[in-house]
Amino acid sequence: MDLQTKRTYIPWIDFLRIFACFLVVLCHSCDAFVASFDNSFSFHTAVFIGSLVRPCVPLFAMMSGILLFPIKTDLATFYKKRIGRIIIPLLFWSIALPIAFALYAYFIKSSPNGLISIEKYTVEGTITKIITSIFNFNYDTTPLWYIYMLIGIYLIIPIFGSWLDRASKKDIQIFLAFWIVTLVLPYIKMAAPLLGYNGNYGNTGIWGVCTWNEFGTFYYFSGFIGYIVLAYYLVKFPLNWSWNKTLSIAIPLFLIGFVITFSGFLITQKYFPANYANLEIVWYFCSINVAMMTFSVFIIFQRLKIRESKALKDWSLATFGIFLCHFIIVQGISDLFFKIPYLPTALKIILIAIISFVLSYLVTKLFDTNSITRRFVK
Image (cartoon, rainbow, N blue to C red; front, side):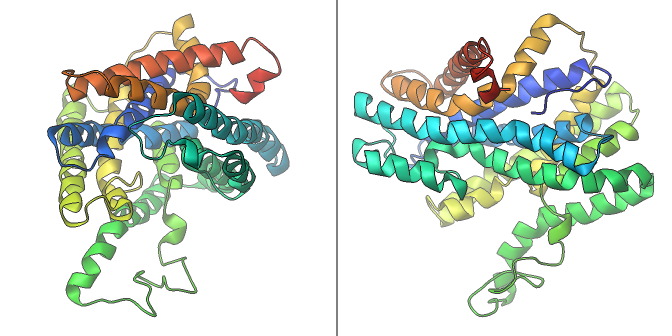
């Protein structure tokens, strides 16, 4: 979600940013239907769409890998420019969103979402959410998990940048190979008990992870930093495949990743119904199946010939604001569509996403009209 610097303008990156942002909104538009966990056709439809859009956040991370390198400033300057820019939006929305949800719960008073009720949005409860945001996000500020993660990425990127400046193609490939191993770790951990592994001292972590240590063998190769390095690699050493070869590899790879994601979620739901801890394993952004889907989308977009336009830049610059404010808007639009009978679930989800995306854009543009409020969405 980083704003582009004075580097060479890349139109397809703007297009990918807008696309990824819409996928995020579409993802959250599925939440209310997935959260029913009633194994109905509506539930399955929402899981299908939700699985389809999992590359949304990894794509944002990959764009950072393109736009931030090479790093030409010292560490302090980089931190001040990058982290300083997102701290203000983080603080503002950590306060604004709980208040907005409290007002919504108070005036709307009813919502299909069991998490939205006036009993859960007292003045004391809202203040507690705001205060404890220094530790982590809450339901009202769910999308802000990405900002906490992004700060961590910004902290480490200059270190990786120094290495990447000197790294050979083979060096980066070795790093990516270890990263791919980490993408499979959640499934290895799930399979370990089947072979008789019961963990140590009540902790079922593997390869050194235990009660007193959460940093296992491949910990330092894991997470979103892998997507950043992957994007850097694909741009510095482009694949130069023809359209036929790109599609012949990307489409099957995407479909395999999607089938694992979709069927895996339904299978997990069968054995661990409504258990978020287990269900999210299959939907991990840093899992092998989601990485397969993300890579496929990225290499297709990388080949697109997108023309520069004012509208493209305008919507691209608004994506950060859309991301920050869309969650409360999706909540309201979802509640409205729940009351509309006889409308197919897929159509409901798509309409919720489109309307929420446009309204979030308008809110962002409204904030952008003032030099003070502009800092909350830029």
